[in-house]
Length: 590
Image (tube, rainbow, N blue to C red):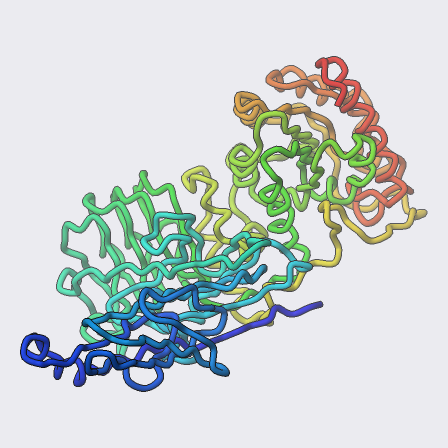
C-alpha cells in the first residue's frame, strides 16, 4: 500500500520591532535619505535586513526564502531573480520612499493540500504556520484532513475544523474528515478557530491533577465555547445540570480535553449545533435531555483512526464514488445491506447499460443506520439518477431503529457524513458513541490511507466465493407478514417519494435468500409477505418477483444472504432484466 507523502515546511516571519521603532515620522520629515522597506509575508522568510535608508539614486537589495510549495508571483517595485534557494529583490535608482510588496503564490501542485493554520501552529514544530501535504491519487481522490493532534493548542481558542475560505465562508470540513483533491492544483484549507467564552461565565469544581469540572454556566452567549482551561485547570468534565435551561445559544463547542459529559449536563436547551472531539469517553443520549432543537452534530477527530483498512471503512469510499460523480454523469446506485455487497457484480451492470451510468454498490451491512444512508442519498442523487433498493427480509426491522457500534465504525473514516442527517432522527447515537470509544481506544492505530481490499472500485465484494455443499448457513429468514411493520414500509415509501420529487428514478426489488435454509417459511407465507410489501410500497414500481431471488443453498457462501460468485452472476443477470423491463415500461430504454 502506497503511503502518503508528507511535506512539512516552516514559514517564519521575522519582523524586527526594535528597528521599526527607530523609523519614526520625524525621520521621514527630517532626513534627506529615502526609506525602502520590504513588507513581511506569511509565505516567506526575510533573510537579513527588511529596511534601508539610502541616498537618492542608490540601489537596495533584499533577500527572501520562499516556503516550500510557493513561488514568487511578482513584486510591486523593483526586479527579482533566483539566487540558489533564495530570491533577490533589487530596487534600483531609488528616488522616493518605497514599500516593496512580494506576491507569493502556490505552485500548481496536483494532489496536495496546503493547511493554513490561520493563527495557529504545527504541533511538531510551533514555528510552522503552514503544512503542505501530498497525497497519492491512486489511493483515493477524497482524502482525510489533518486531525487535531497535528495542530498545537492555541490559548483562548478551540479548533473546530477546516474551511476552504479563511473566514469560514466556504466548504466546511471536520478535523480528520474528507476533502476532494483538485487534480490541477493545490487545495488550500484554513484552520477555523472559535474564541473561548469568558471563563467568568463558568462555575467549576476542582478535581485534582490540574483538572476541573464545569458545574454551572451563567451567561447569555449566542455561541458557547467551553474553554479548555478555566482558572489554569484543564476542563475534563461537565456535570449534571451545568447547562440546564440555556436558551440563548445556537452553537455549543465542547473542549478538546473533555472526557466525561454527565447525564443531564444539557437539559432543556435550545441550541441547534454541537461540536465535540472523538475522545469523549463518557457521554449518552441522556446528556442532552429535552434538547429538542439539537439537529447538527460535528465530530472532530483528535486521535488516529482504528478501523481504516477494515471492511467497515469501505462505506466512506462507496459514498465518495457517488459524491465524486460529475454533475453531467447519470448515476445508478444499488442500496441494501451485505446481501447487495455479496450479491451484485456491478461491472456486468455497467457493461449491460453501455457505460451510460456511473454504477455504485452502496451495500455494506443492514446494521448501518438506515436513516443516515437515506439522508445521504437524498442529498446527493439528482434528476435522471437511478436508485435500486433491494433490502433483505425486513420483517424484523424495528420501527424505531437505534444506532449500533458498526455505524460509528463506518463514520470514523469520515465523520462529516453526519452532516447529511438530522440527528434527532436517530436513537442511542451518543449511548453507542461511548461504547464505540471504549472499544477503540485500546485498538491498534491504523492509517487513513489504508483501504479495504475486500471491495472493488464499484463497491462489490471483490474476492472469489466458491459454491458449497452446505444447504444452510445460519441467519434466520422469516418473511413474516405479521411482524412486517406497516410503519417501516410507510417510511420506505416516503423516502422513495422524496427522491422522486427530485427527479430520481427509484425501483424496489428484493434481496437474495437461501431457499434451502432451515428457517425459510413455506411459499404461502412468503407470498403473504410479498403481498403486504406491494400494498404499502406505492410510491415507486416494484420491479421484481421475490421468488426470483430465492436460490439453492449451494449458491450461498457463508450466510443465507451472501451469494457465491456464481450466485452473484445469476442474481445480477436477473436484476438487470428487471431494471430494463421496467425502464421500457417507463419509456426509458436505459
